[in-house]
Image (tube, rainbow, N blue to C red; front, top):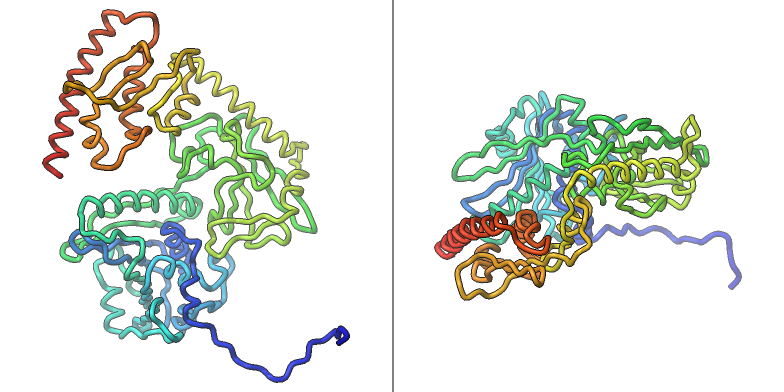
Length: 502
């Protein structure tokens, strides 16, 4: 058969998707990015207040709500909003784009998604999707009285005359335990991660408008606890810029223009705006925004390799969705993927004064080297960190403190034939800790060579100077005796508390 330019057809057939396709939605979401996607919808609805509420019954976590006081949905709008892949009409400035955000974000975390909403002048309305066990695309209708009752619960703010409640049941990532301490630990960590992620993602929107994102926990047998507000975390929020910066570099390719606003932090800082979730070194590089919503935080995307000396360098780029041939965002709005032309365009970008990306990177490295030398020169030199210290801790010590050219200091656990908490072995540059206290210090967790990083860091900073010099002075011996007495009593108290709890 010879090649033909057109493929013939003989009628059509409707091929409905298998409901199990729902299982693949939102696979790239974490809890933080899923909640950010829901907050996008609240902001698009004009909400001034958004509440994320964990629900627990006694010790067990049983559900989660996201509530807002936005415009809400009318009975005519809710079916479109709950349609898988439904595309509503987006207004200028809306953060939504793909029409799957609510469903993908929710199904990535929960087996049951319920949306309850009320628009001004309209009755409350509700729909529910069940992800698992469904053999069709039939969406459950929630009775009006239940929808109204959920909207009228005791939230931190009013959802009258309008608002929306999103409810997740059977959340996958919740601890499958009724152990109060484990659930509390999970909640504490999760809320801290959520506050950090949302504070960074929405820092422009939280910092310039009267808008709040709140997080709390409600026990169904009691009341909700106090709400924690998400504070904006501006990755460019230095008090004073490095001299001569920021500068804007403009890149043009195929008729598309991108502005790269190049910032240099004046020095390292302990402020959350500098350190950021994941650490400052991993957050150097490019920050992509769409309509003031952060999509992507850090990484050089082919322009340069990550380098410790470039961790003061951060550059922002504002895009509107996909930029042909240059950049595109993923459906989760958690990452931007650049095309093959991107690095070439940025490499050719220039500021009005002729500054290039190479000049920018060299300037950032120079500021880093200057400030790091100045800070290091003002601190006393220490022994290099050795065995027993967590690699991240060891790296931070090396970065922050000048190093002596001597043997590294090891901090390890060992068996003692007495109750003393520590033992100084200057000959082998080793500080030993009494293994009988190890389980209590670790709270029953399994230990390893680099365990107890907080304790060992404190011990390193407190006792490192004991291993310097040719001998111990009278003051050093007095300090050892004092520290031994206090730390041994503290360790025994820790062991006693752990034994009673166990």
